[in-house]
Image (cartoon, rainbow, N blue to C red; front, top):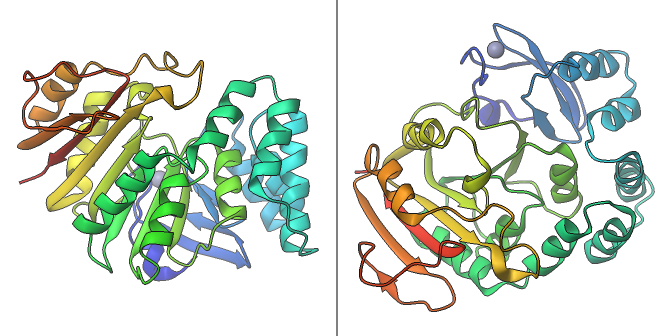
Length: 309
Ligand SMILES: [Zn+2]
């Protein structure tokens, strides 16, 4: 990981700076005041759990057992992890390319959570993702930093990159699931993309006032500490930066009530503590709304732009 990129991040637990102490291609080790964390397949893993996964993976990397480190880090069922593991080696060691659609279709068949993979299969053709990518491009400059909370397999960035091929800034994708991030890593040019595996419920591992835009697509409803996370978003945003929130659960059948959306009035109340200007709109009816009460918002299908003044 480049020194310049690493300097943007802090440890979410002790808030100390991170220093890279070991590097071997896409694998490495970073250290802060409180612990060590691994970089596996280019993904910086800033999580601690009861199983001490971070330390166990760090040990494997130190012993140069990179394949074991990758397998240990992945989440999901054993067969899911095995498929992703094979995919990584086929792609980067044997140069065998298998399309993402085929991979998602296979995962849908072998996984107990088929509706999740069906949801992912519908994502990249969604018009709202295209609109989000355009909006991010209009707010962020060519060399600015964009943060995607709950980036999953990187759909927004993928569309953003197609629309803005000359973007020279950093697009930071945070997600709890290393397996989702590995799927992003496999199908993306990561020259300007940094993947972080971390739970934002602890905090956002970025320095103050570093990013121009924060996007949260179908992820805020799943975050437990919403008030704290919104405060964190405000902290990492630069002045005049925007927080773009989307809830759009109906793009595939059975997904509408996954997170039950989020009441827009409750969201506005939470945002009001840290943000000063908002615009809400219903997705799929596309009338831009200032304020909340002119039209009833569909709690499962709306977007909100909040600006830090
Ligand atoms: Zn630390």
